[in-house]
Length: 184
Ligand SMILES: [Zn+2]
Image (tube, rainbow, N blue to C red; front, side, top):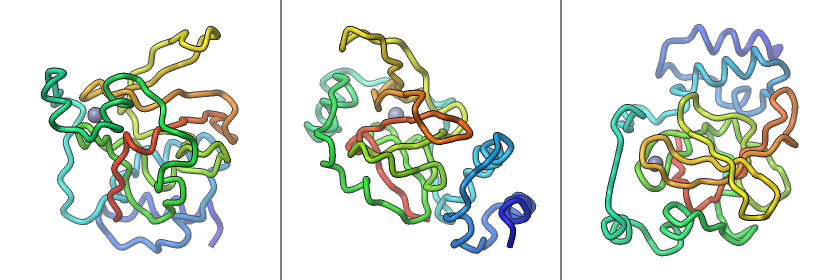
């Protein structure tokens, strides 16, 4: 099936309907319209019956509560803006259909169809689920970078760069330890 036709067919299918998994994974977006479709249909990557929080329910915890809730490596990244060692995350090779959620609060952030192999050693995405993140400029490495964090819990996830693949040219470079993968 032609890519464009498939995306339209996928868009027309009711939520939760069985979609042919192969074309969804293989479809590479070529236009910004494809990106909009990916963003609009992100829920089709959820496991049936999966209950995940929404951005409208903020999660605010104290430093001590976060320390109790998170493993030390995840705490270092999410709450202290640390960076994991490149190539250390098993999620680099994760290719199954599903949703990547915040390891701090469970908010859905990316789908498997938004992931690509950047070769950097960190899970990388060319777009996000709409409204999942807030950004700020940081100067830790002297030159300015755009930091992004989960809108629900404020947890740091990574930095977004402009050397990603077309059509967005975005590279959301995410620490794997800050993510949990929920297979469809
Ligand atoms: Zn979060």
